[in-house]
Amino acid sequence: MIRKIIPKKREGKIAAVLLVIAHVSLAPPIVSAFNTPELVAGFPPLYIWTLLVGSAMAIILLWAAWIDAWGITMEQVPPELREKTGVIGFTDTDRDETTVPESAVVDGGEK
Image 1 (cartoon, rainbow, N blue to C red):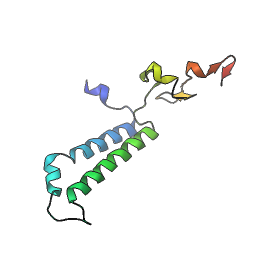
Image 2: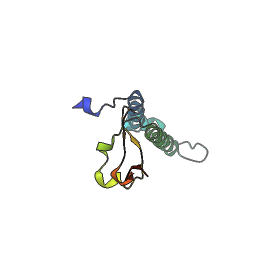
Image 3: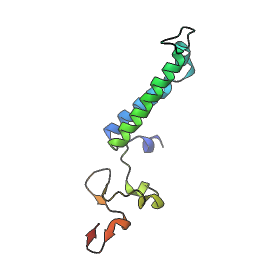
Image 4: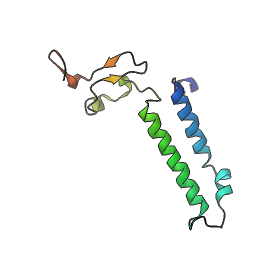
């Protein structure tokens, strides 16, 4: 079961590890270390810590999506979303085959 959720690509594994580390850094034992009564630049340290970790998680997710770290194939996209995405040439995980949505095919080739 666990093998099915581990990404195959190296970038996917890196993104998954970074997301787990960021998620663990929001656990109560870690967060309590940053919950001090002193203010940092007028803000509570816990607020700053949560903003930094949340921003890091967002950046990791954006980076992973940008490079297709999890290797999403067209078969994993719901049929109702395949035509709405407007993606003409959707490249599969191995980057060798290109799947063209039916809405992009015209007589004699692609739009």
